[in-house]
Length: 348
Ligand code: FES
Ligand SMILES: [Fe+2]
Image (cartoon, rainbow, N blue to C red; front, side, top):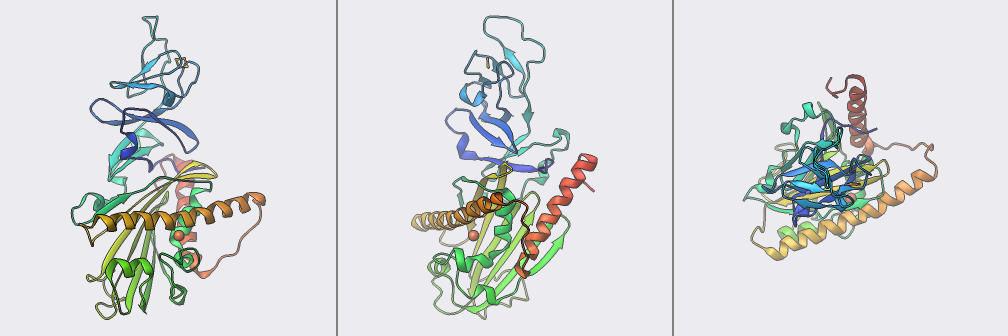
């Protein structure tokens, strides 16, 4: 069962260019997205009410999408408004529509009660449009695993030293404990790696030749919107017990929105922003490649993990100290899903 009354990333903004409809299964529902003539993005059920051909195989005509089988046309609300060969549109010729909002370079869909769709609940990833920050979206990764495994992975960065040796990891990480904070609707994991060499990617980014203090602060909100605040500054330029991040040094945020396709597959939407070397196109590409390589390393782990789980789904697992944040996030999500089942809104 999925949390419904929340926003999920459904597409990158750039995916809807070119005038073609885009079909995608989200939360086990077939969804088609397209842009109307003024550029507004809409989301409808990807199933024609006539003989159920996916509308994503059809054509966008102005503000409408036309079915590719017998030519029924639907407006942006999912109402059939034209039937070739007859003047009368039969009663009940409608398909579902969902609120879809474009923000921060992503399209966000609300698949729960449409009356409860509150745009202020879209993750506030303002950096993506701020001139003080660089932004690389995506690309979209399809992962054959349950979406909660992605959030587990992001909230437990002890894997960096094993899975991401080439980019982010070094052995120093596990020497430093994590702090877990639970707030209303949010879990925060904080780890400071103090007075250690910078990892390879950070060395390239900031040219640090001495020791650095490095922070990893991960904030996750149901259903899995997770920001990783990462960066480092020269040791001695701040105190880890002080402000959240040092002013001096490099600052990166990895923005993550894993959206369930099915119970065992996920569309992993992500982006990253950074506040250094902003005019350096080669560096922008390097960041893009570095993140992609890193996340593909995670994909291999997550898919192997899901396969292993599927082989024996009833088998329990053990928990470690580093699992505290991901267990807390799982509990918060479970509680929201439970509330939705009870009162329909997910609100306590
Ligand atoms: S299936 Fe869509 S018009 Fe017939
Ligand atoms: Fe990872």
